Image 1 (tube, rainbow, N blue to C red):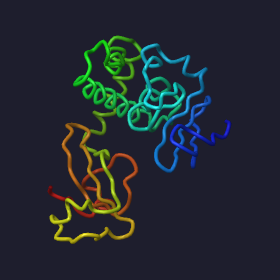
Image 2 (image 1 turned 90 degrees about the horizontal axis):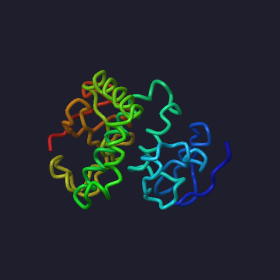
Image 3 (image 1 turned 180 degrees about the vertical axis):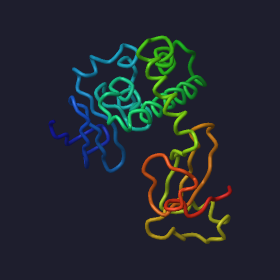
Length: 211
């Protein structure tokens, strides 16, 4: 696997190789997937025709475009994480399509075309079944929406805190969403929650914050 030194978001600080030339890179400000041209050519037309945010067809940024890589090459992810990745990717597609629907009709909404591929294509339906099975098995867990090593200034009055009061070292303020129904909650955690977590995990959750 070749070492990647630059990206559309600046100099590469870290590189995680998935295989077959596909890598996830991080920079000081952003990150995303690098997919070599020959792998892009292997994608279903509905996926490879997506106009990517970077403007470069080999680069898929980490906020939305990453899901194209996940749906095109799910086999590159470890078996134990594949269901979650596919579930998150499909969720991202629907969210992006809903957002674009406010500004474009379906003919110009490229994310809607991906939704149609998920619905009408055999491979797309197979991915939806994998995602549904993972959601059903993990519905009581939460996934991250927002994390901060500081309590946001706008929320400090809730805690009776003044400006500049950080959390203790290692603690995190997080906003999370329940997998089964999308219920959102806020927590202060003792450590950073890697992956889905339970709100009853006493080794992780310090307190729930009512907002």
